Image 1 (spheres, rainbow, N blue to C red):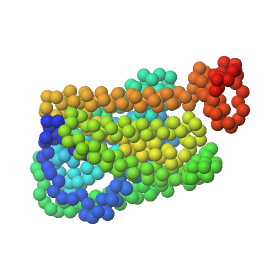
Image 2: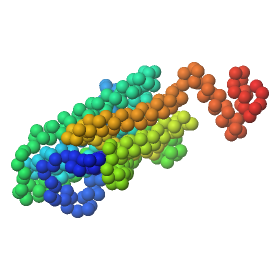
Image 3: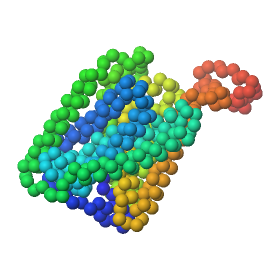
Image 4: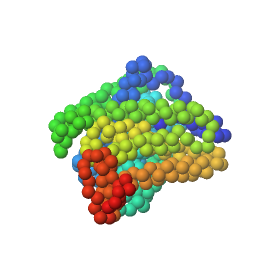
Length: 387
């Protein structure tokens, strides 16, 4: 998320060399179009191409998501340098980068990366390996690699920049034209990807559409995911902005921590619903909310940007604040990870846990009056009755 933060005692946390002189978009319609196209294009990239059968089977979804998050942190560092004027435009192309940097970070990269997804995948990985430590290491490595990648992205932006500030008006006009072509290109990219997907039902999903309103076809899944991602990116951006403006001076970026904790918790809704009925996994609406909405609203790339900014500040407390920020976010991530891991364990319990699942299910069925459930030896008595 591209929302500057006023830290305690730090009135100018980034020394800007270049200030944006013109509006990115000529009309409000172009701005609204970018809000729609950037999250949709990011969703197409991650959900269609990065999660294709070839890529996922070759590398595994856990590695694909980690690479996606780390590369997103690299791009966030790259565009942050252009947004804050640390990298100076030297022509129409770099001026276009400077103009669109804010929206790329706020809408494209917030959708491209996913803090909530990182926690969920870490829990699944820990469950598959039967070791919570594996999931915690996955989270720590993702955050560490993202921190390094963000710095590399910023360095790359400086590498291709120039010390001379441009003043030619034609550069600005050409930059506007380039951005317009970019939006047209993204529209074509989204449409072609949509047409590439088949319209047939997803396997083993007969009758799901009647129950969950939307038939689970690949095209419907992409459309639903894109819509939820658009709303998620916008709501996450707005919420972070509100929190940031209400807390003018604070030692760490609370808006990132709050958004990651809130939407990370909401992302567990799919796992929780699957506990009562595994067919909820086929609901495109629930999947769109838990995966795409919460993923776009959570701030993985923003967290990497916060850590890099705190670490590189000239204030002597910068390193201390960075450590506090990382620790606080990791603690909340670990809490969410543990909840998600426990849900994974209850979905596929071992022998000891399975006995408790059966007992609880019998109690629930008995209280609902659905069936007359016999109580076996060793089961928990119900309503004070005898076994």
